[in-house]
Image (tube, rainbow, N blue to C red; front, side):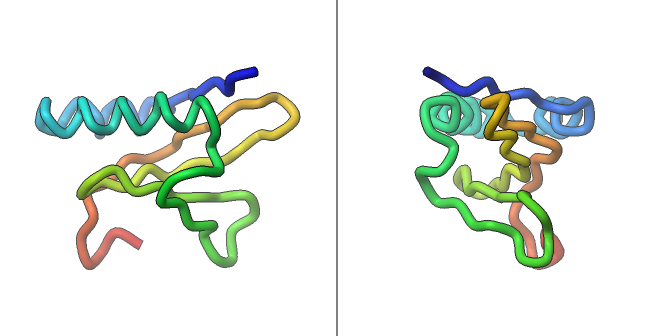
Length: 85
């Protein structure tokens, strides 16, 4: 059974500002997350309850995993810089 990825308005707004070739790579990562959100280059964010980040090239997807509902709640997409975290 697959997972369902849901993007917030903030995540969609950030995605709209990203160059097309990077958006394509991010969409591939989101599809992979829908297969299994626990695989790939992920890190549980310290001090946060059930918050994760996944690397997609130079971008980071910040998300929550709702296990019972099988939902990946992507709340932010940011370019990796020294100020990202």
